[in-house]
Length: 267
Ligand code: SAH
Image (cartoon, rainbow, N blue to C red):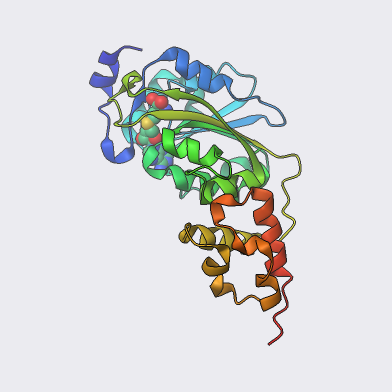
């Protein structure tokens, strides 16, 4: 794809997080990161001018794209005729995906709009029963955070919640120079593969609340940051409460939630 085409036909819109990837080899590598197992549909978020889409269309699956930008949609319709019936002209965050996929599983892929990265991940977690695999590009720090392990400085809410359901792999870094216009930051490609058993051993809402509350005050011990949970004295004596949130692995967070769930406050 030439730079000229992108400049002439679609002018990037900043508020939509538009940075068009211009390196075909990287585009193909991102698409090839999908293992394509146990599903027949793929949804690409924010296809723009279709740099990933054209490689997706070569795969033995049905490709759908969801795009909010009218100019990009017009471009896709003109250049990818077979795709036209599967272009969803909606905002990914607002669209009810069951209208397209019903109960069927689908993978997600994209060079995502970075301004809504976290929301894309949270929506994926909500729909995890239907999403066995997720690959794509984020701002590098966000991709690293999602994949990081306990003990790392960037380990946080997004890491724990994602890794409770998915194995997260940071695949490779992409420099700003291969985009038009170039973003100010480096990008990172990751892959999420849903765990074989992704059920939780504890209450899901409580788990989310525990993780979020603990990391809101990440420098404090859990004994201090989880005060609002009104825990029994005997539970608070457990050594796990002496730790800070970034020291807890995902499975320890799940265990902590079970302990809180089963706590009996004897006042
Ligand atoms: N995948 C293309 C474009 C990446 S830029 C490429 O690699 O070149 C991000 C794209 O996401 C843009 O096309 C933008 O219009 C689209 N987008 C932004 N917000 C969106 C939303 N809420 N729902 C769907 N698409 C969105």
